Image 1 (cartoon, rainbow, N blue to C red):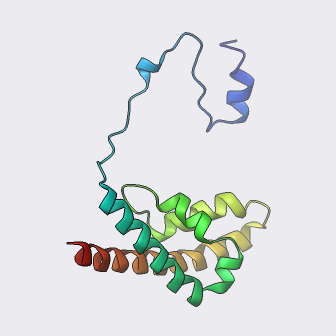
Image 2: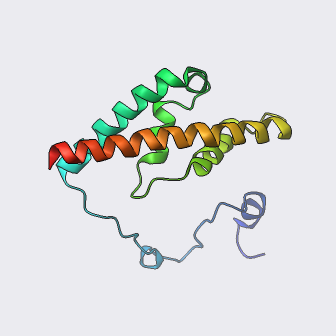
Length: 133
């Protein structure tokens, strides 16, 4: 037996717990680009403009929790995810209780819907950065 965490690690293969005796020195920090206050404000403004437009066009998906809280979580990264990645993230969070055929149908539909949101967001980012510059 390797450690007391072995049964937990076997049950939750995705969960990688550190072994006793390992230190912080083994963790490698990820390089994050430096973002200025103006860039953060531009992203925030672009996100909310894109979301307002998206919510008007897709109220059914907003009601199914593809909403501002979910989208903020998954788009606060250096690179925007793809529409399929957003759909898969939503499915992991909200779809596990649905039958497989329903989940597949939802992912397929939501990938297109998510791509629409990302398109709105990218367009708003372009417009916002042009007005800031």
